[in-house]
Amino acid sequence: ASDTRLYQPNGKSPLQIFVRAKKKINDIYGEIEEYVLETTTFINALHAEAEIVDKAERELFESYVYKVAAIREVLQRDHMKVAFFGRTSNGKSSVINAMLREKILPSGIGHTTNCFCQVEGNDGGEAYLMTEGSAEKLNVVNIKQLANALCQEKLCESSLVRIFWPRERCSLLRDDVVFVDSPGVDVSANLDDWIDNHCLNADVFVLVLNAESTMTRAEKQFFHTVSQKLSKPNIFILNNRWDASANEPECQESVKSQHTERCIDFLTKELKVSNEREAAERVFFVSARETLQARIEEAKGNPPHMGAIAEGFQIRYFEFQDFERKFEECISKSAVKTKFQQHSSRGKSVSGDMRSMLDNIFERITIFRNLKQDQKTMLTDRIQGTETQMMQVTRDMKLKIHTMVEEVEEKVSKALNE
Ligand code: GTP
Ligand code: MG
Image 1 (spheres, protein in one colour):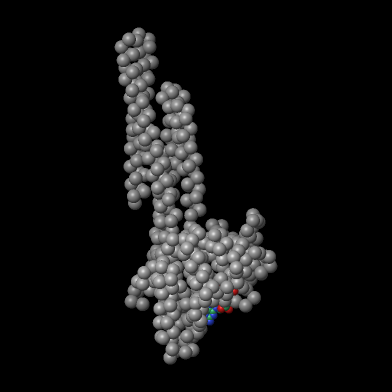
Image 2 (tube, helix red, strand yellow):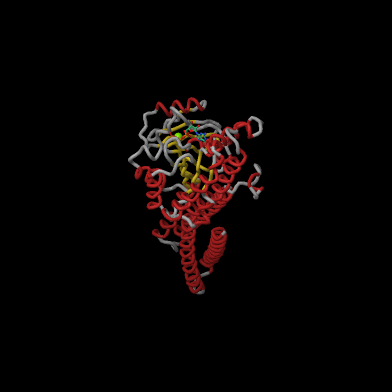
């Protein structure tokens, strides 16, 4: 609570790290694409006019055009992904709703999550869902209808339903965060499939526990498998339903420290995914239901405490916001690394290949020019006119290639280093 910046609603979100990086790398690739296209035209001309460039070289250069276009397409779709796991009824869907500030995912009795549900932002103003293996967009008029649609669809527990929600309704969706809700880890025997199908590209995992009980074997086992398949996954632990502790204030502190110790041990000694200091920043005591209610009240213009369930609302509400801030920092940094590092090195290697090829062509042009100069002395006036022209063309080519190589090299290495 000492960090007041944390709680300013208008404080700049750490998600902007990812948003800015994505914009920048997209711009860079836009420029690289322009260069590649321009250079290809030039190379093709060299092939057609003077045969300085052979067919294989020309084709190789054209392959860069496709490579760059393919990377650009992947880049457009890159996002930050967070996946929620935990035992049935711990409040996974409620946590996601609280973060989205709206009751989007069905939760509670009769609304057990029975398959994977992914919530992602949609640019058009409409909300719709799509089931796996079908291209049909099922329009969602209201949230009740969404809940019914999810109940009625006969879906396998490890299949995926994608819910597209208008970006402008939630800042996290606007900034390209994608949420994945899951069925309880206690209800499935296919945890390996779950991980292979839904977790390998997740940037952050949130384990939602029930603060009223202890972590179960199923929950632990699931994360053991995750950390075997992924190196050092980012895991946050939410001890949810902490509002229940208000009923027993006398043992609140001891329960909290017991849970904290167990969670930290789990992250450090068992999973070995973080050290003590990092792990202490990953464990929170919250009430998802209360946070959601508070935010719904806030949206109506009421004070958030109108959503309070029990004593101590303010502390729990702050803790939820603290979780969100640390989560945002973690996910944006992780996603920049995992998503863009690869694209950066590919960009570097393409521009490196292009450079050495252009250098090579440049050398050939120089030789070609010298050769022509020798011949020139022996030529008649009539041919001399053409030769001067040819000289001019090669001089231009040389200049153009030179500046192009320099520019590509300079821009790419500058941008990629940044
Ligand atoms: P499954 O989808 O069935 O696996 O459950 P889930 O983990 O998604 O839980 P869900 O969000 O559906 O919540 C289950 C019930 O617990 C709902 O009735 C919620 O309103 C309630 N609930 C969730 N979070 C809290 C909380 O922090 N405090 C209290 N008191 N109730 C909560
Ligand atoms: Mg659920």
